[in-house]
Image (cartoon, rainbow, N blue to C red; front, side, top):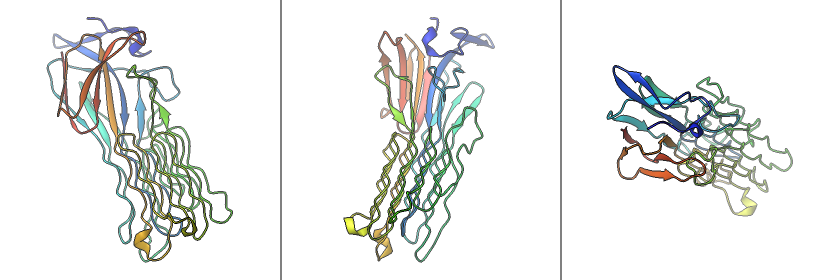
Length: 309
């Protein structure tokens, strides 16, 4: 049962050896939970969850396959989205995503939270897989290729995304900047390419500031100035690692919540014909069609286990 060449440019064959067992090689997409958006007076946006990929010839692909021992359950952990900022509670960093493999654990870092810059309880944001705004750093895991980018400068900046830093607000009338763009998954499932890990959009300053758009890949849009009747940030999309959009505030402050970050996702691509079992049944196994290269795809939207033969 040899692995096919399309599984990654780093493959030199289908199986290694360990204590007489054949090791099953696999490709992966690993995305952590996005950071929560901040609140109050043009609150700052959440950064995207860290993005790591082995599959395909893309700038963010390591093209290095990992291995699992057959008939051995391995744990997969899906990072939750960071909590929204909502007075008096600060926005929170997203949860790390990870999976076990034959040599240890492979991880990506949760997205950074956005600042809560004003109101009765100001709170700082945080770095992460991609950083929250303003200007918190990305690539918290110090990985190569990097898992994300910095948040945009200024309190109306967007959160960082997998392929682009957050964008600063234009500086006129409190208008906010968009979140950084996420990254495509190089069609790892064979069902058409998707984009993940977009940064949240900045929140417009009262009373007439326009919100920042969420970054492509599940980032939530920011809230608008009160003249537009929208003050809350939009959540990052579930299972994309998108950052939460920032709130924008009229009084009272509790109406100016940021958006929650989007939860992460893991996709593991095994050789065609492999017997792959996942738990719980919320997670799925599908067969990728030719001509992309038939393979068995395990998709995790909640934490569980994977076993392959």
